Length: 107
Image 1 (spheres, one colour):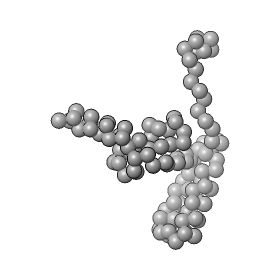
Image 2: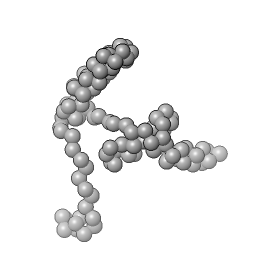
Image 3: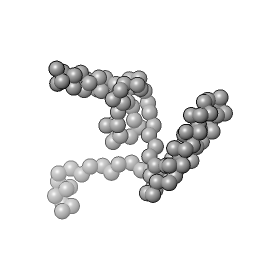
């Protein structure tokens, strides 16, 4: 029974694949199935130098649009936590993986 449930959840994961702009983030999924199938999402990490300000701007826009102020306050608190993250860098793309021949030459 347990394996059947795992199989079903695995199939649902494939059907509900979230669309990330970065292919290396595609393993970050929605196990509870809250996000609709093929909905584009965008992930900001605390290490991104502009993430905290971007999140604060989202809270500002949410307020301006008449969104929930309690949600906006929580988002600002989260932005503060992101800003406090000790490691910072600019966003980048993943380095292309080396093929086997290149790995041998690199050793």
